[in-house]
Amino acid sequence: MRKIAIRCLLLIVLILIPTGCWSKHELKEVGFILGWGMDLEEAGKYKGTAQIALPSALAVSQSGGGQAGRRYVTLSASGKSILDVAGGIQQKTSRFLFAGHRQNIFLGERLARHGLAHIIDEYSRNPNVRLRTEIFVVKGGTASEMLDANRPFERVPVMGFNKLYATIGGKALNSFLELLVDSSDPSSCPVIPAFKIEPVEGDHPAIKYAGSGVFTKDLRLVGYLNEAESLLRLWMLNQHFRTFAYTLPADESKQPISVEIEHLKGTIRSSAVNGKPSFRIELGGKGFLRENETDVNLSKPHRIEDFERQLNAALETEVMKMVRRTQTVYKTDIFHFGQKLHRQHPFVWKKMKNNWEEKFPEANVTIVSRVVISRVGLTGTPAHLPQGGGMP
Image (cartoon, rainbow, N blue to C red; front, side, top):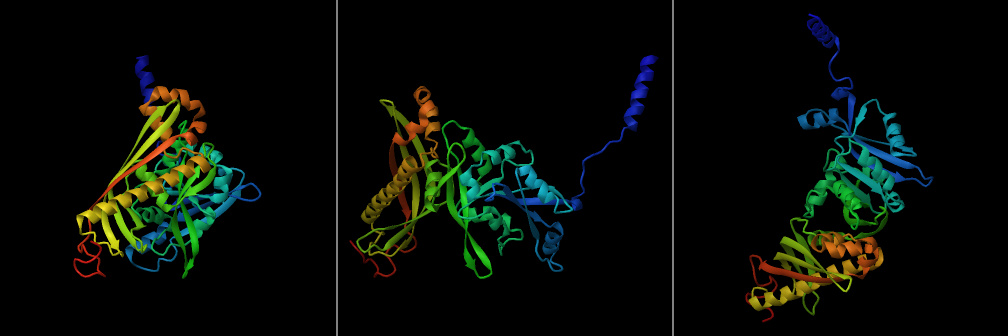
């Protein structure tokens, strides 16, 4: 009888306890942060900038009625930490700011050169930071300038950066996740995509993809890869993107030939001789001739073979220049050479891992490119030559 009474009492207590989401916020009370930027001020404080969507304006623009106006607002605040900055921005709006939908994070160049260790610590702890968030460096500028720049083709400007990267043949970056992985790896150093603001074109500043920022193990920016080098690095690592466009002078007149390379494939093989690591990088793909301003008639098979040799030699030279500069100037393993050696020769890696920063600049690197021309377009003979003309 006592057990029944206790159960009834517990049931009554459970019924009386209020249920529901104690921390709920109505959608009309929430401000959704879509873009976030961090800068380092001269006084040593952090400056944070948030680009917040205005749902009411977005709804008007999608329905087609009324005047949409500006569909976002940009707010900034300064503080000694990211938490101080976020609190300062929250104090400037009546909406509860929610960062779970944040798509992009921008880092000013001064902050990147100073170091990102403290920034990444907060981002890696914060459950509202999605691993699929993209993170970018603002080359030669600040994150606040990037977030203040209007984009004429986007309702909310920050949403256009991933699309911009996709137009050059890129894929989904997941750059924040890759940053965490590379920073925790004992050998690899992070690379973060970069954008820059160019002089004003009309009423809007031009925002351009500017390659990639190269970071050390302690997360300090030491330099950049240009646009072509950044794509070549992805090709080496077999991180697929759609196409790679390349132009090279093909004859004595120095007139260009342009080719678009598809079906990209890259492999890296490692070895070690007398305690010195060696790496062989192989690049493969199929080329599509897009432009020929020379007198070379590439409709003839032997001319295509000659051009393939020139193209592959030029690609090997470009990749080697990038690798050598990274070894001698930046001295950062952004090519995952250490990972490859660890996986392919674990016992060799065990001997080298404690002084990999010294071994990496001394590593021997061989580049082999095997791009074949599979298509020359609808017209084989260059348009400025008579049919069947050109160099025999």
